[in-house]
Length: 136
Image 1 (tube, rainbow, N blue to C red):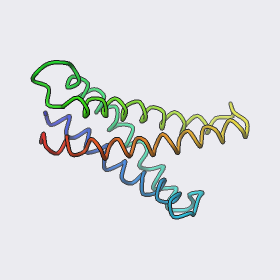
Image 2: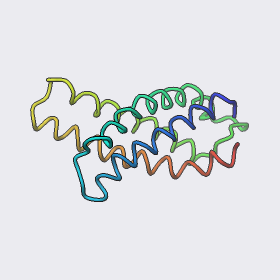
Image 3: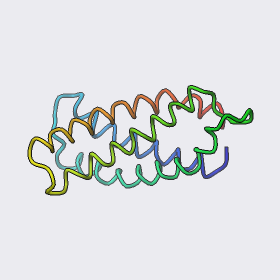
Image 4: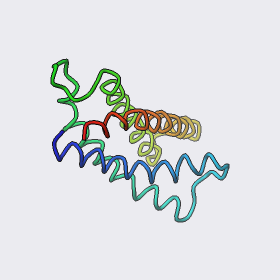
């Protein structure tokens, strides 16, 4: 794997850790909604996560072919696509509620979509991490 692929994965993971601790962590300890510094950290890490995810999509997509020399096994390739898909859903469902396009019900649905797709994304990253670490 080249330096850009590792860097994009690292940026996505570091920002993802901040997002998971502030988002999922707040939900897990029973203190939603996020407020004060927790919300600020969550919002500050989101653009880094987006950049890391975009970089990962650009650098890792070449590793998902059916070539014999691909460094990822089949489950790791599937998890990569799950990460990319859930990442886009998380980003869209986090940004769209900031617009006046949806009422209270629509915003609640987007909030739940954001929450549960973030949980699936976190699980996929945790499952794929050993494959990434083996290939360094």
